[in-house]
Image (tube, rainbow, N blue to C red; front, side, top):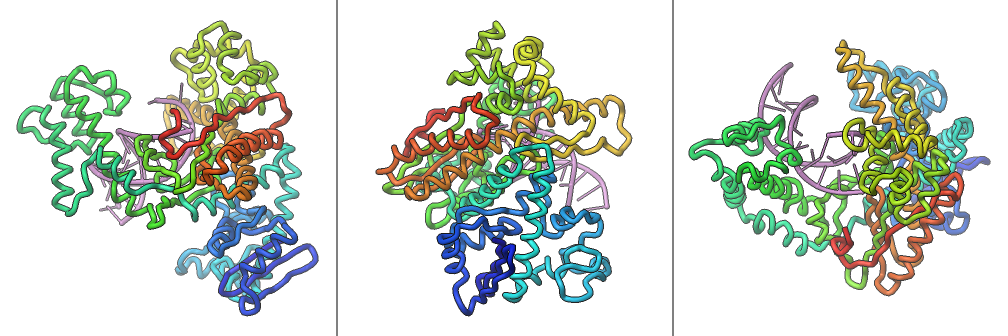
Length: 560
DNA sequence: TGCGGCTATTG
DNA sequence: CACAATAGCCGCAG
């Protein structure tokens, strides 16, 4: 059931037998859609998450959908997936003929010469710029016509998914679509944050909220002075300028190629300025990125921190979030507090990437290792090394590390798990020569062709190596993202009836806001959902997936 | 003003 | 800093 909706205009729907038009004057669009979802439970088809967001804003949360943009990103790779682009791809039209939708200028007016009448499809087969630019939304009849078009695109996508060499591609298209629904809800609902608790953490780093610009400047100067007092008297260095920090360090006898924290870590004892600088950097991070301004901008009156969620990035397909939801410093997790009468059920997948590697490569020996809760233990035993060495070696194989301790054990890894290592090696080779890849679930990992500019042999080799590491990692990280999303949308579907809801997705971790009296039930449900997700996603049941699940009041209560 | 480089944070 | 992401500030080019 394809859908186009604008609350003030109405609803247009399209099925295989025709279209339905419901003007907003007759019935509230939200009521129509809710009723159909409850009675018929169709798979709603729409162009993008925009429609999901419209529905969520109108108070409607449907069960399932087919998100054409999400499926396009799966099939074709990359991130661009506007209607005109998807239409062109699905009709084998040249990309350089896609009408522009930006502000009109002389060139785009000329390019739109194909918009002869007011129909949605031009004579050259492309979508009309006027329609994609908003014309689709002006009348109920146009909504229905737009719905019919997107339905046609979805059918073509289904056909394409059946043609690629990935049996799970259609299932992945459905879970990726559901993930877009989840993203629309995450963006609208936000993450519960206790403003007072969060401000207390911030105050620990940078002091109380400044009451004036002058006070803010003073706080800043005080932080700077803590570092500069270790510098030669009278010297002036801007700590925010890497070049000047390097000069400052050189002045006290420390020569470094760059001033990154990991490099300075070992020089803590060389001079007191190093320790002071590292502490300054931490405070500066809180002050500039995660300070009071951050709360003011993203934390609502209702105690929810909101950012924009995307179902997949442009690379391997992990979820992304803005507003610091994915990279909030661990220190601030104390501000993430469940609301009154609620708790968080927190669960994270254990060793997700090596387990996924065992699954997608079909390596029976590595799959046997996943039977253990800690799969690095049997791997270490098999290789005849200690556990830390085994772990570094496995991670190194997935990331493409070629130096250090991991590289030395790599040869043994190849002997013990030849199928998995060959799978990674093939992905690396693909990256090196610019051959695109598909993940287990069917996501296209586009490999750009070699740099057109003149580069030295050395640079060319370095770039090829980087693409090799990228390909090697993308097939694992991407497949892990696919499994994670199946898990997340399964929890979405099963937890809602219990009054619980996902409030954060973090690559291998879920935070589910839950009524306190149902905590144990939801915790069990989240674990069950992982097993259900693994059964749906995995090639077979040879690989075991494990989650560490706990019930907590605030995020920082979770064990690290 | 836009953008690359550097840096920090997370998984 | 091996893979990915978001984000802020500096320095430079235009």
